[in-house]
Image 1 (cartoon, rainbow, N blue to C red):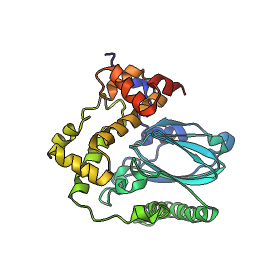
Image 2: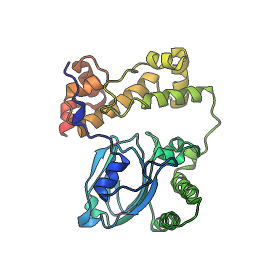
Image 3: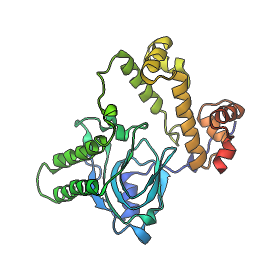
Length: 307
């Protein structure tokens, strides 16, 4: 089997690389103990001055208000911004923007995981989870509300207040909850977590930890229900029941869907051969991968790549 050329894919973009490519300077506090936070206007990088946003992961979080029509790729999804939207990006999900020259205005904040150290785990919010909603189309009134929050960020970060970063964390939480309140109430009213939900959550976290496939992950090691059960120290029947109770899918279905999603991403956004993709996803034979992919997509991997 041909080994994967790991350097063909785009590397994870660091905060330092973001500042160098965008502004050609580095802030003094970029790696201090309290974490990093900053807020920017998209101008002057809009319209004809817009720069490409390539498909890759970043090692920081980004919450952005965009005014203007464009398209964003989150993992294997393509979502169109018809007029204006609020987007949430995190280090686990690769993304890129298209038609950025149609963006007329906007504002965004960036921060790393250390910024919320000891202040809760923001990855628990669905806007930062792989299966969550990451883009919210806004009305004009909602744009005014979001703009107001960003204006407060600018005022706070430029102030001399000793606890200004605590205030900025609070405003970030306001943005997150602003978006979450836009979702149907049924998705917000969660029931108390029971034993099945705990096991299912641990399984999903363990599954997601293997992705995305990049230079740090050469091949999947956990691919079957029994693999995950052994890792979680539970009986495979117990795991299967927990996953079925919470998702109405079998453990194998959930694993297969996630592998299929990553296969689509690698085929569309990497230069890897089909054999490379198959190897990275844990298939011992490329024919097994071809059969798996065609069964679910009704296209061969090569045809899907060229569509």
